[in-house]
Image (tube, rainbow, N blue to C red; front, side, top):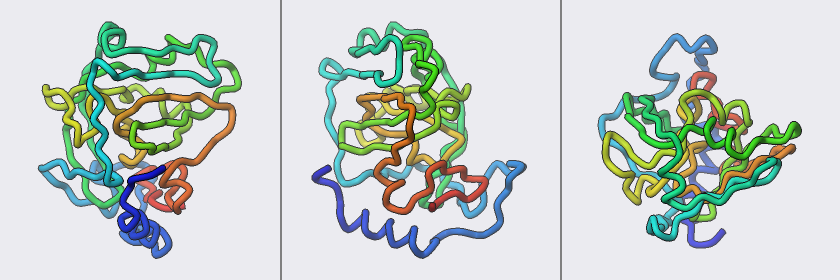
Length: 214
């Protein structure tokens, strides 16, 4: 992966080594809306690796492949013809901010999985982005009811800085799991930690358990 901000990456790796932002007060029953160590914001901070790919919709494709019976490659028109959903959820970023009541529009990950039919051995999902970023999630986490590939936020098309034209939204986990500028969803029998996971971040990333770092 080239072009990313090496200084930023090194700083976040140092955070992981130092256990920065950890409170030691997890909420395993998830009674709190705001997870431990988080602060509520009303704006939407922009975080990336120093690269914001420009992907015109007429050049956009989403490949879904790997351990599936029916791999597909969707262009923007085909993606838009799939059943559309709207979901409202909160964002919890590992850098300590949370934003409530984000209204997303897009295609449910469950619809995408119905389309490709995961093989019995499929247990993990590797997400690939146009900036070279990757992250990993369990298949059962990826197909929770509030997960989607979103093209709109609060009634407006996703901006480039926030991952447009389409990004993953996996609300129950720290937002580094919700890959921006998504281009490929790969199903796998084996887990493959992604960009931040191999740099000291937790493999699951549950905010209520403070799974910031591995």
